[in-house]
Length: 396
Image 1 (cartoon, rainbow, N blue to C red):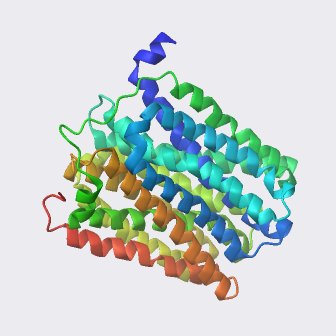
Image 2: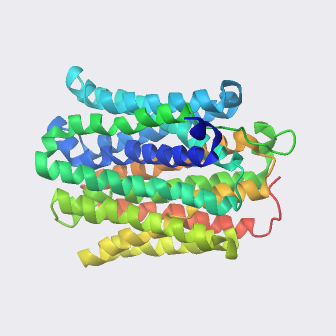
């Protein structure tokens, strides 16, 4: 126990598990979209609203955290975050059947674990940034890769359980996943945690929001979140309904393929990213993302559409951690508030992207290909913003 309390390696390990927790709360429910549709009689646009509820709640938490997190303290907040995640996953198995409105039960459960998810998103990056390690950009990308591997684990293990015991047992499976955040909450009570040192007085939130350069970074985070989640949240349903494959194959070839290539992309960025400017790396990622959306939505060959989904995962891999690293590099005095605002923007995109896809698809007779084609607007917008940022030396 003493070794854990004195070693920042354990802080990093706990942070890795924190992002795995984030993957659980963002990745488990989308595997059940069509199950919710049949079991509770929900339409695609209402199911899409569950994603909006998740990321809108995280967005509100991000906003509050930007103001109050330094007063609460990193340790108390990160432990509470994991407890909220565990509670939300357990409520998911209880409330939809307990309440007269299953949709309300799903929403309340999602809100509970989304509170934890919002706190994790705000806290993990500055916790790792405050650790005494070298090459922060690589460390950040490697950290975020664990979100991807968490997604792969959630999809693979959940799919295996669905296959062998049946999708009807999704409720106890949700409770099993709650063990991960519960155990990590205990881990975080023991590891050493330092607050982020900005080398002076951190910029106020109003000062950050007055900076046009910082607002560009906010735009990038919105686009990064939307580009990633618009594809990943609907990948399973897209593979099942649009490509006419089974649920098991849909989960493996859709979101699992997406998450695996996103994780590989983040490991590549962690290893070689420092050799290329972040701006160019992000520009190439956004361009590849546009191409992947076109392949997924316009290809008449199902196999190519699945390949496009995977390419999208690879292309968005460096976006979220890349923008965080770019902000830390160009705005070294941003402090915890900067990370909170960026997380807020990312969650805004995470909620908007899948919801827009769901609404457009529902309006056009459940045409997911058309909905995803509209989602391509986000990486296009990121390309334009990066071109605008290229002329700026700093964002402060």
